[in-house]
Amino acid sequence: MAKAPVAGLVKTRLCPSLTSAEAAEVAAAALADTLEAVASCGADRRIIALDGEPGPWLPPGFTVVPQCGGGLDQRLAAAWDQAGGPGLQIGMDTPQVTPDLLDDALGRLDGPTGTNRLGGEKGRSGHDRPDAMGGTDAVLGLAPDGGWWAIGLQHADSRVFLGVPMSTTGTGRAQLGRLRRLGLRVELLDQLNDIDTVADLAEVGALVPRSRTGSLAARLDVAARGPRRCHCASGQPSALCSHHRPVLMAGVSLALRAHDGSLLDVGTDRWHGPPTAEDETVLAGLTGPVLDVGCGPGRAVLALVHRGVMALGTDSSPRAVAVARRAGVSVLQLSVFDRVPGVGRWRTALLLDGNLGIGGAPVRLLQRLGDLLAPGGEVVAEV
Amino acid sequence: MVGADAVAALAAETGLRLDGIDTHGDRHFARLSNP
Image (tube, rainbow over all chains, first blue to last red; front, top):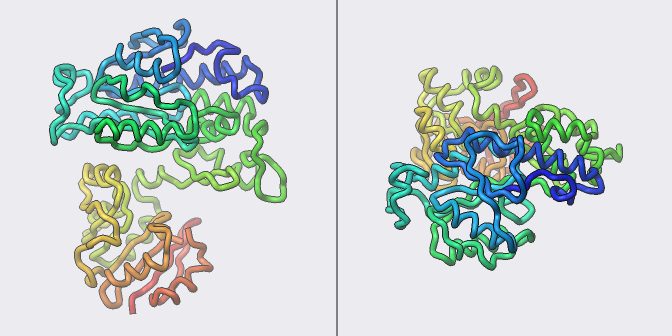
């Protein structure tokens, strides 16, 4: 769902901090970034339900259908009716979306066996409820402002949208409730912040500084136009304060937003990459068997195994476990507070990155690890 | 993250023994042993 980026008609909430022409530039950049991600994902068909006229910003490979009139719920229902399903729908306010995020959502609808392959022969053949080995009925990506940024369905059904209050702080919750009341199995996607305000633009731009949107946000210096001020004595806007500048300039892929609006890079690139020199130094001193608690994609477990050290990862995230297993890592999907094998026999429990915060109670976590460790065993925790 | 200065207090509270905090680059790793 998109609007043609015409000044005065798009991103009007960015004004008066931005001029209407600048707001339209933002809309065009966000649209181009979004379409680029869609073009690179694994979907078989790409449809843009457009309010306005196509322009040079439209890349090849997209089918354009016009949006109907009425409220957003009606326009969504009509767009799905034209597109059919299964499918995934997003808007143009989340330019930080990536092909991987889209493919993940499509994959959840597709299912592990590919029985509902999107746009493929089997997918097109039926609107039947997917079988137990197929994908989920629906996916929903919520936004921190209370809305949603993505919805995926096995097939079009106007009951999903009609009457759901749109563009409110309760829209995401209401949409999720509607899906569940229709008896659909729903999986939630990662949250993404959408761009409604100048502050949103500053934050999203900081997350994807090399994108069109990020570059434009930097050129327009939107961080200086936003209302948020750093909590420190400088009085600077958060994004310009010296406390935050290194984080925002680092090209982060994921950040934590503090209560004052400041961002903290949580270093997800490191999670997915090979072990760093610091990791290697720590891992070289470990004695097996090692339990890597909150192993994520499993870089430490894999490195330990390559060193000949017996190691097992645990993570409560099914996505992390899936990624780790694809890399050949031995990992169990569970919380460390669940039933963990080998109680009292582990020589080392590893808490890398921010994992000392697992469960939000470091004392309880360390006590639990004490139970899991053999006498004389060791917790190695990044602090 | 828990600051390195809070680790000793954590160790005392959990019954683990703080054997040391190693610094590698800009990262810090506490070693806590099970008595």
